[in-house]
Length: 470
Ligand SMILES: *Cc1c(COP(=O)(O)O)cnc(C)c1O
Image 1 (cartoon, rainbow, N blue to C red):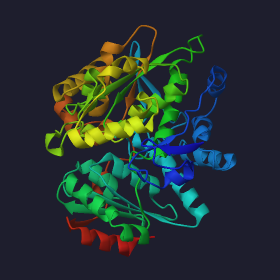
Image 2 (image 1 turned 60 degrees about the vertical axis):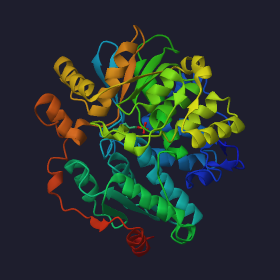
Image 3 (image 1 turned 120 degrees about the vertical axis):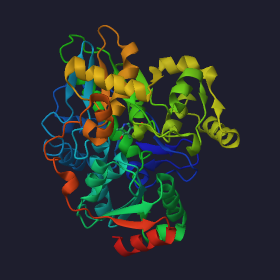
């Protein structure tokens, strides 16, 4: 399997070459040259596999330049009970008739990003060793991505992480999660400023090509195809556990996905394109409804950061969805020339109109809806009253938007994108008391923290990288 750019300007490359790159040289995103197909017989055979071996079967369709035994060792090293809180790795948590949570947040940082990032950590260490090189990962975070990346890369040989976060702007729990890591290859840098300042510094540092080359600067952002591929696995897993008892081997399920950068739900689209019997992909947004607007109207209009609201489901506060280009590529019949023309129009006018393609949205299974702060509080309360389960605000957006699409005989799986303890202030607002703390996280705020606080200055960050690079 080789990889192309959505915009047509990249010669076909093997997986491990695109793994360590960000955007393709033409500004596009890497996509597999063809979507692998899975037969009903394969689906049946995969029912009895462990999660790690299911991951191996799915990933080897996308990763053909790593020897199969090595790939299996990587998935087995990643999807272990000690890392994901139990043998099932991803449990199904029934809420009520027809609707269940898919428990993607049992990993070390209690959010779904661990599912892909933990694999990426092992994969990077393996590929870098094989190539005899090292990588210094530079990123900016306002929460979940940064901690998932740090927990994936901590202690890994040949990799260091330099993670910028806005000083004092994350929850105490999120700060404690990241800053309490004592590993020598993890560098927490709190920047006096806001998230956009952090992101601007990352852009400036990566834009200095000489510096980037000298220090082998890389990224682990959500456009990395390896992250998408690793996320495809849990759609297969969710399908197999939700349809276990249904005599029909091709029984359908629907998934509801709290969405921001379109990475999580894109993996669902890929799984469906591979032949997994998914009826609907329900895309949920918060007040930042760029994607809901697209699926309702066919018009894609990313917002300026000044038009992006700070909400109580902060990991979905995005102005433009970085993975969306890969879906549009499929929508346009995988035609890079048309895709490029559309993105040129977007750059020139700030939007594009694909309303003529609206019938296809339904063919691809997509429906969408939006959820507000009041909806989140109400949904957290209702789910708690009816089932005793406390859900996090992002998952609540998913539940709220899923409800009108629940159909008899089709299980609706809402992707649990985080555990509530990460966003306890909103839980307190909804339920009048803090979120339950999972074992092992009782006193995390009291642990010693390892973080440097600096001004929002590019040279300062470059100096820190030069001093700590591997
Ligand atoms: C990252 C994140 C999302 C959004 O996922 P995308 O892949 O960006 O669409 C939703 N909820 C939580 C808790 C997240 O961390």
